[in-house]
Length: 479
Image 1 (tube, rainbow, N blue to C red):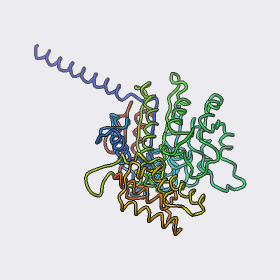
Image 2 (image 1 turned 120 degrees about the vertical axis):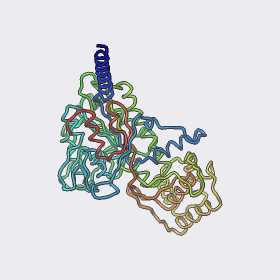
Image 3 (image 1 turned 60 degrees about the vertical axis):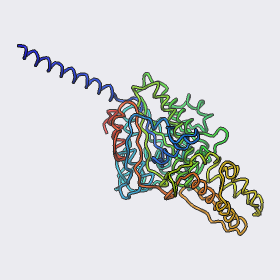
Image 4 (image 1 turned 90 degrees about the vertical axis):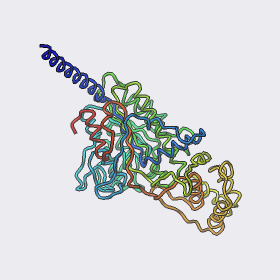
């Protein structure tokens, strides 16, 4: 009898353990009502690590300062190859992150056989969620467009833009709607078409408040005259009241979350697009500032999470790494990231400063004028000491570019910069011990950070196509 009672006790105890395990699991894996999907374009682990090293050195530390999102409880890593290349382009990577299916480089929202794919943004919309697509570059640029567009070439900006009104998505925002220069006579402005379809268009954050109260759907952009390669200003170059990604996300959350008690919920995709642009330029200081700006954007999301901790899922990743960035010295185990503190402008704006000076002076620019710009904008001789060889290298470049008139430009995907800016910026990067292997993308896997309801799905190694599938799985929507 005692043996029987013991057996029954063990069975009873086992049932209780299973019950509590299931209860805990159900609580932990509760389906999220609000999903934030953040993509740091070009943001590999090196870009994140460089930013943390920079912040640590500013406080006189060797490491120890972490960006808030790197402290998320769930961390993974994702491979990024495309269907036909070991190194992906942004549209192929965006398609993988949006649809869970690989495609060829330069294709957008289509599989390799040009079959249109349905992104998770459409899945959320069909399930009754509100949907927002936001970016710091053009709204019809590769990554945001992958969530609603379907084209055999990412450069078909006008055609991509024409697809936006048919989505029915609730909120779009970015620098602009990129339109081709010299449109055909029968091509109407994308803004005109989008407005006629029922979207209220707000030019700048100042117009948002007046538009949000009279429109069910919104397109928020900086200004209408932006062209194909414009974006929001780099964080390092910002002045005045320009639209910023943190402000965009603040407005998106305000608009999508207007009725958190009664709504189904929302899905918001957020792209920090200019980490990629500055990395293409091999501009370490600007890249660090862009990562910091992306982190400030994530802080807005964390604020929302803190108010809805059991209903929110945050997933952060990158479409690829750009630049083959490294934190390394040619000799010695040292970093000197704090030397970037004196950098006040991006390489592109520095190049423009030199060009404008040359025009102003009719081509007769003095070395002291160049030296003053380098001191004021990069901190050379003003906190960043140069060796005699380094100063001679700068003088040699000055002589060739401004005295002899031989200006050797460097062209990358999003910029063309002059020799003086290129030499000076490379020198500053070398002093900071930040290296680059390419002006394009690399095949290095990218980090994945997750927090909130369903976040346990994102631990460990995965492919980029797994991420949208895991998001959908977490919400319980049919993929």
